[in-house]
Length: 533
Image (cartoon, rainbow, N blue to C red; front, side):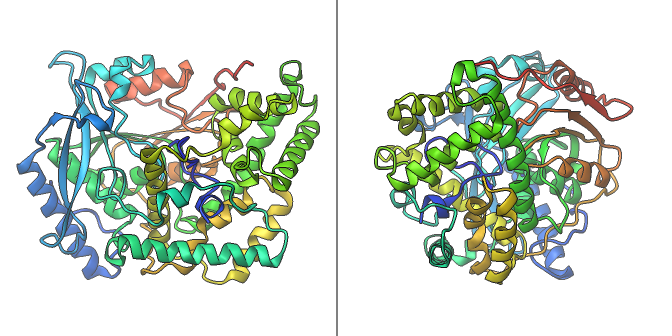
């Protein structure tokens, strides 16, 4: 599940999905893993290929230049390319180029500690805007920027890095879509047909040879090649959401190549969770965070006039949903589009006010405000291409990474049962992921994330009520990475903690990145301030 509302995208692990919407990172050889090739000989070939690619990239470096004008990255940010194999088992075969960008550290040469590489999540999110935290003078990152170059990249298949596609972008964003909550077996059959067609579209538009290489381990190998191209002996890494899974797999495959790593809002790295079970867990967590938001709306009834209890706010949601199902708002906003818009409130506290405001205005007679907020912008060609591409990468990576159930009976049984008590996101999430049931290329076995010799102490940051990456994921990674420290933001639930103002967390992030210091024990922080109407 990834938030991929057309033209209103955020890089995170979750969403109401394409099937509702269209028809959730040189040196030594890597430590042994259960990698995408399958079998020890395949793993060895990929490990050798990764080492060779990193060696070549280290020699070639990156030809930094001003970024293309249409990339939206102002000077002094610079852009470049890193060449990687499509298939690491064939390092002399087909190559693709990974887009990267950077801004130099703002401090002195003596203060510089290297590059800090960032991934915001997805799968399918671009990290290319990370250097803008410096150009826009984001206050939380001022101290870290003195010591580090900020480096972003488009993972393979994303944006400017050999982008893939599964559907026509204009068709992908057309609205309204079918209600994701099925009212009949015929509704389910229609969604199943859409899922199969989408999987086939991925193969037709991107090619099976490419889809077979769209995996987390390959993105991790790409990340290590980027490290080498940057001239860094060891990687400093910040990963959020799915970026934490990249970090977890990188720490497993290349433990000796890591210097410092922060993972924020953590994907559960257990093989049993990647990816089918992880998405079911999200449905439970989203329901809880949806209720947190409803409680806040009710507490601020003087502003929003949507009811003084959670039940009253939920009743308004049910009424709105039914009205949009009967007659799509503005002709384009039905239940699918509403879910895609409203889900941002469980995702991010920063969405609490704008979502509640649009919700309130609708019941005050202003339908246009909600339509403007929830409807796709069909005229935004670039945004629609980016939206479709992001969902294509999400699907390709999650479907290829791991084996998914192929029995519709299992999908139907699991999601029907879960929907009864967790109705907000369950079916929307199911349809988004259902292409994995009929995926056209071989599905791999996920890496067994664990500690290998050379792994440095890792900082793990997590809020207890996170919807997209439930708290248990952080606990699981903490168990698997010996010497790691878990910083818990108790009672909070916004997805992506390190970008929020919370001194208890912010000072520790600075201390770790600047000095390598971690607390001697895990830390529990009070929640950041909740939004005010």
